[in-house]
Length: 181
Picture 1: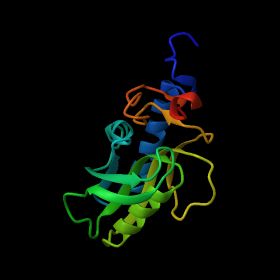
Picture 2 (picture 1 turned 45 degrees about the horizontal axis):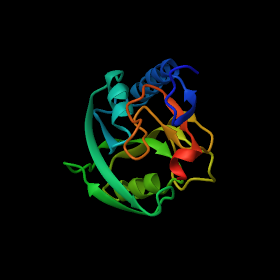
Picture 3 (picture 1 turned 90 degrees about the horizontal axis):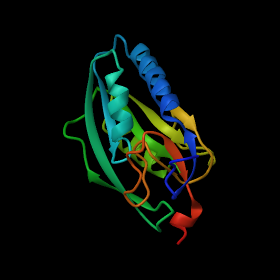
Picture 4 (picture 1 turned 120 degrees about the vertical axis):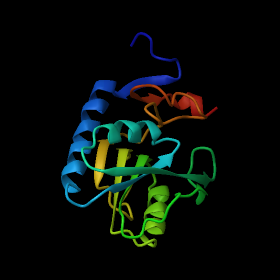
């Protein structure tokens, strides 16, 4: 494909497909929460910020946006122990909460956040993720899913490798030679 960055193997999800499906997800969330009051959307930084921004622009229900940042310690390509770097600004007791994540890979980060936020007594807690890899059963449900992708390293639309390629408008496979150097 002409114009593809040399770090990239191929485009997995084109921009138009992402934008169309984000609208579908926003429509479904709007239907599910139509008469429940504001929805508290928790974006997981940094990867989910582009997805969350596009998602909330299409919601037709009252909503609040907040962010959390977590860090996963471990080897460069493996998940490790998860810890909170930035917490929510307000309590979520009796709020309808949706965790908005960029990617579910091993599921460790989403599981950690889900269980931690569940302990804060929300009225309901759901999850929304842009992409999910096919790795074993998860401890928590993915209620709203953008795309299932192959088990490859992906970048674009918020996803990055070493802070590169995050702002691409599509999701692309990163060449293995880039992250195995």
